Length: 138
Image (cartoon, rainbow, N blue to C red; front, top):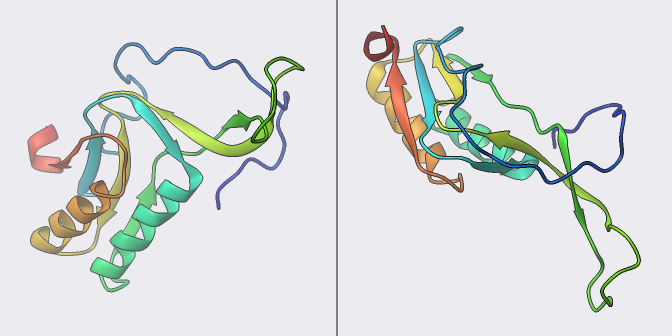
C-alpha cells in the first residue's frame, strides 16, 4: 500500500472538500486519463485496486502513471469505546480528490484497450469518473 515515509503531524484535521482541482487537472504524461467528476477520498487500497485492474486489462503493456498519493491519515477509535478520551489512532491513509483531478494516466496501448482499462478501474473508486483523451483535453 502507498503511505508516506515520514509526516510532520501524526493526526490532522478532517478539513473540507470544496471547489475544483486546479493542480493535476491536465494531461502531463500519458495519452488517456481517468478524471474525477466529484469530490471524495481515495484510500491506499482503492488506489492499488484500480492500478491492478488497469495493469491486468492492459496485459502489462504500455505505461501507467498514478497521479494521486494518499498523504492524509485517517483516524478511527476502537469498537465499543465510549465518547471522549481524545482522537483515535491513525488507521489508514487517504488522498483527497476534487472534481477535475486526473487520477491515472495511460500510454503505449490502443485507444479501446486504454478506455476499457480506465473504465473498469473507475468501478473500483467511490466517486464518478470519466475517461479523457489528449484530443478531448486540447
